[in-house]
Length: 625
Image (cartoon, rainbow, N blue to C red; front, side, top):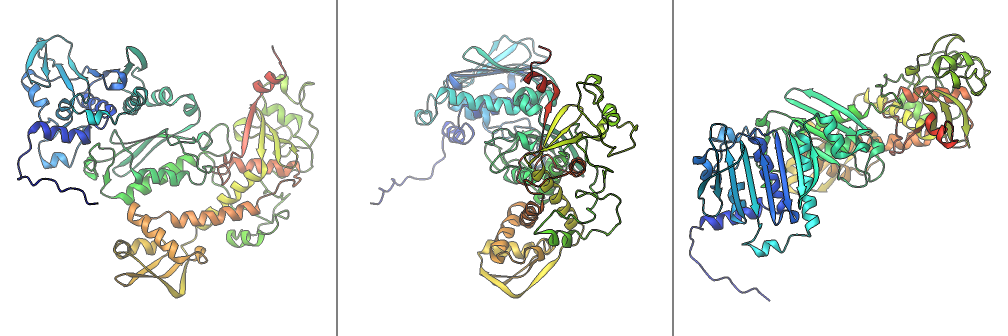
């Protein structure tokens, strides 16, 4: 059944109040949108202290007070006028927005769907002034320097919109999250949040490390890596969470562009791609990252809520963010002291205990044949002269400072073998061997070792898998991209967007190893693909690459597919469970873990080792209690 036709009406100018209410439908989506707009105005005014008071989830009342510059009495009516602002005055200002707010419609939209009162006082005024959002009448008032915006009975005159709001606690949760987002990026400003007369959160002025720890919790503070990189006009700084501290939901991801919280798919994709090698399954990383760049290089006026942005050179931004986060995560070597791993030397010699994929491994890596003295299965780094269960007492005594637990003590651990690392009386710096030295193997799966902190448990298959995987990637990265021409080009039907993408990004596709050309307006032909992926479905691969190039200015499909192959190869090549290793082989594995990037996790994101401190062991046996 067809819907009845609307009555025909002449074109007419809408009244200002209705225009503001229509705009409010975009700007004032829910109470949290009001909180966001008012907080941004407070920060743009140079505030260093902001108080947020909410009642009934923000529906009954939202009152935000700041100590900013304030507004002069004669400009108060303009503050509530539509499209009136002090932040831009020309097109050039719009293209170089350096403030959080700039449209000049937030206060007018909020006032059109609520009972708003604005009280403000600047430094030169003898007293504060107040304006009523309904009558626009300005009257003298009391108050310190700054501005207070009191929004009551939100949507009182638009009951249909009010029906779409959720419960009080749900709406308050959205408001509290907005306050946390903004407080997270401005540690130089103190924030206070209360709900129904009860103080919920309060953050004093501090630095970003302490502010992020107080907002995201100690779990994030104890499992994060600092990041601060710059390249040309771009700078990325903040913290990325360790893969082992990932979450089941993407609720601890905060990305800011020039101080503005955004949910941009290009930036999210870049960070997600950087975590791909170390993240387990469907887990989500936690991070607090800020991207600073010239305002002229980013358009923040592409979404009513300003939650999305558009970059002038999206490919450059994507690659910069990806590589910056990747380099930060590469610090997750198996070192409890957090030292950046040294470059891993190419593997040498044969590995006689590896079966199946050894020929493929050697063909890819092509190690230089070098005679080695006392070669072990894991390399020559720590080749021993004899086999045993531990190092000499002299070496352990030098490694562990606690005399009560030294191997020479009657309460210590027996050690009666020749030195595996250095001369018997040589002092070993503890920081050089954060994983310590092997003691034994447990059920053919785990390596037990002791270091300065206590006991170390290592999953030998997962650890060796990561070592081989990083070696394979490093070997391939040194070689130029090998291209495999197709004897018979693969053709497929493509829409206009795919054809246009292929024609506009021909150089980018060639750099990725693809030759994709248009045979006719609706048909594309794949004439060559990367040699490593010659057995893949050329049509599916080409479509995936074209989609990535269109959305992100480049493609991670090639790297992702390549890493999947290398990960499978490394998994099948790594030492298997129930393989009995000698103490020298176990120590050699520990040393290579300390020198391998991302060695804290295997290729599938599982942890490779765990530390059990001496204090934890003492608690198990009630020592000292």
